[in-house]
Image 1 (cartoon, rainbow, N blue to C red):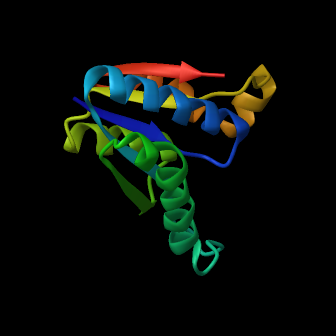
Image 2: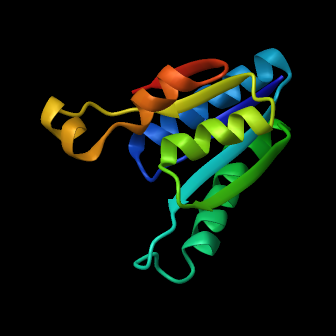
Length: 131
């Protein structure tokens, strides 16, 4: 079984990582930690390296102590984050997606969209949300 964790810089993400550890142990699964960076002219230099460093810290803190096989993927893309995450899940035969979510107002979703909503509706597999 393959689990994908959609990583962000949030408190909800830490909760999603903890759930991923439980599921990986229960199902003898490997875990892919995935972070998507929108490619645009304002993308800071070193954003990919910083993302990789952060994901490596997650491996050291959550997965390595439990002996769970884990890999990282930091994607720089011109697609939306949701589209990139779905494409990754399809290409890598992901069986379960785990992502942290936070409450957003309807107005917030209108102006900024909702990556979580897109992933939930378009995913080729089970999606577990954690708040």
